[in-house]
Length: 115
Length: 112
Image 1 (cartoon, rainbow over the protein chains, first blue to last red):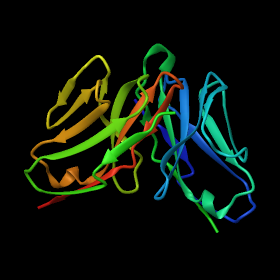
Image 2 (cartoon, helix red, strand yellow):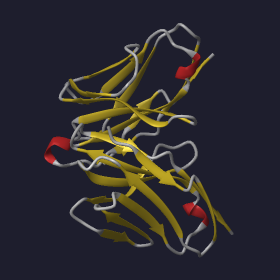
Image 3 (cartoon, rainbow over the protein chains, first blue to last red):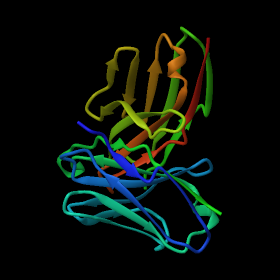
Image 4 (cartoon, rainbow over the protein chains, first blue to last red):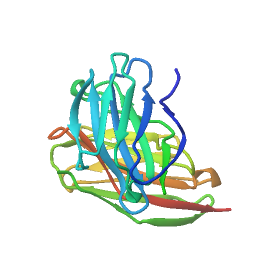
């Protein structure tokens, strides 16, 4: 079974621009969670999508948004980029926490650098 | 919300020795505790997990223990090898908010 894939792997953007990151979950997994990883803040939860609906949200500003498609693929968008948005953005897929399948499997991440 | 604390932040061990990483959590509604290993340039890899109805789980050289009363859980790696060098994260999943909260990570270095 193929793992979680994320594209692109690396991205360099300028302050004020916007960016879209993509995540394809493991086949059969319907839940996709996004995390931001930085040396200072560690792994922080952004949001979770299940069946095309945002089910959970972390403490990030509204510039961070996402969506999920009917095939469970997910995208996250960051608008009006700031230098502090430079981070590794990780996507994790799971079957469904509601049914007790809590295991989350991570993709390789997208390294975003804002200059 | 859940708060997960992880110690130590760095750990250096001689090859063949054991490594122990400890985590505490605050939310009594947490019932699932995974451990992840992250190597440079890669995403975190799930290496072992434990649910709240189990006190200990072992998989070859790695084991995890859970003390629900004290709200702490630990990762034990025996007979460490150079390929065990990585950053290890503990996490706790709370059914209060269905979120996975992570510890700050432990950088493990295995000296040959």
